[in-house]
Image (cartoon, rainbow, N blue to C red):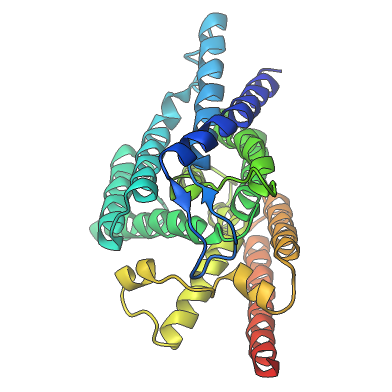
Length: 356
């Protein structure tokens, strides 16, 4: 009942603050102008991510107040103190995104700030932990953690290219994270997933609305990517060490695939040579762009990606109690499926372009 109560509050706060935020965005010209790689045709306000953030904070605040009233705030499994570093880092990423949405930032400045936040997460204990406890092992874990956090933070930003895609995909990702975390007793971390699911659902109707539309903005999309990346690192997903690594990769398979696929294609075509060029590059070469190019409608492409995301989430849940070999085979199966999809997309786009 407590989870349901805070879920409802997060949904309602986001749902009813978005119209106010939308008016503020218009008032101060925080708008997304059509053109370039963008598919939308109308000027659309940004700052939707602020509503999602407010919903999350409202839900967590109510949860903390109720626990204190009930005298259970110090219970380790329920205490939100363990998730404060993630919330602090998420707030910094949201703020950085707001600066980008309102005034603009160079790719170098964004990358530097994101790396600093990622290193702060490492210092606070949010770190990938599977290599040997040696100097090189610790250095490798720090490097992998930074790549994971910064990579997924930006991957979710680039996934936000069609109405309902980023927020809907995040809802599915968070749902499966929440289910698994609750099943293994990590209630505090699972609570972020549950409440953020509600906030995303409160935002989604406006993102899909034809006339009163609003976008997450860089603030919202990077915030979602950052929170998801940290939940993936902090969660204890299974008893088997290999399965523990595979579950978050499966749940976040779509943004990971999009990041890897676009990087390979850009490097192959000589479009990018450095990380900064990768961050600066804007083109219609992401997963969802290819799906639209081969004939799917924008909404059809979104539903297609939803279906893949749900399938991967089910696979992650099913291997939760399996041994390493089952987890490895499940991940191998997902990799093969994505490889087939990539081949079909590239061939389909080339043929379609040739016909035109």
